[in-house]
Length: 553
Image (cartoon, rainbow, N blue to C red):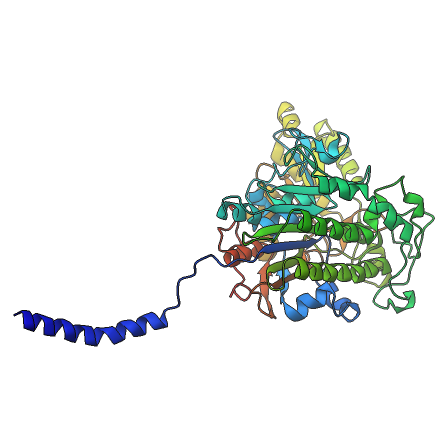
């Protein structure tokens, strides 16, 4: 019996051993660690139209940032913002949360809070104080008003807060909202004194390296350089001629064209730097200092640096997207980004870091430019509309103060006053809507509580719904006709659903990013979902985006 059992065991081993060996050989060994880059860099360009990638392509440097993205990275060519209003704070929040204003609560740069009955700035926080400068509003900021997590928060959760997450931007909202709630720091620029500051939400005092950076007073150094075109001005054939009557003059009424003398601002006006390409230069230098002194990407625990370039927005609002000023700004920014990539290659290591680039919004043509070239568009006289409505409501209902304000193309009704006067709110709303429908600049106007009943295209309806927050949004939506905007006779703005405001670049480069592009429709909300998949972390708590599979292979 023992001999029989031994024989059977031997035969079983002989037949099964090869199969087991084959199975083991075909199964790759389990990874010992989660595969992640050493550093993730998020770049948001404040006010970048998608078409800038190709409008200026021939003039971008071979070693610049944009050609490195387009030729060695992955481009999502048809990326859209899925909500209105297409405004700075909303865009920065959406990119890093994968969410929309209806969920994340940042419904504009500012809004009227119907519950608190006061105006609110997106990052204001009265419970914190300025760090790095005298007390005041520029530093009383935090991400408190953002009601969901960011991809940086989720990275911190995944590493038990061993990652470092830092946000940097000239604008406070561009530094604070991308960095998230659990960030180690967010820094922004104080135009009162030319220093980079933060708030007590993050720390009690500035790190020594930030103090040392501020002590260099780089802003005065840049002022000394002045601003002339990077190349001979007659080569800027993609832009209108210099000095158009519909362009703004943020550097002084007497400075109408290149070259711009900036020396007069040294030591006296620290805000003017924002309306020049040197605002981008200063931001890059601050980012390099953060990488070096905070040792970002120095070990195998993934860190994140969020950078927002604010100057393109200042320049674009004043001179417009077809100006020599904006073309020169982007040619210089291309070199700045390329230089920063070279710095990361040397500091963190080639292939050890990953970067994405997008924009918080795009921008419309200056109405004067559109008129000059027989394109649709113009100025919507919103101020006059409110004056007319005040008169109409006063005559019809005995009180002209039934509208508390106009924010983000939404009118807010004065509900307490309407209730106290025992007025029919539906009738008041109807009176306002009827007046606005008669205005030649208005495309659509409707009560937001009737959104699902109004005849809109599916895209328009979805974008309005995604931007509507029940606690914070207004009562009546005003959608202007294509090319029209609220504003003045000079400069331009953004906020509409139209592609000129909502079609933005989305580029990935670096660690495990394939080379290629897709023309299928992707959305701003997909960025955080894609990063979460690549980093093997949970997507942010309000994320509604989908993974861009072509990038996250």
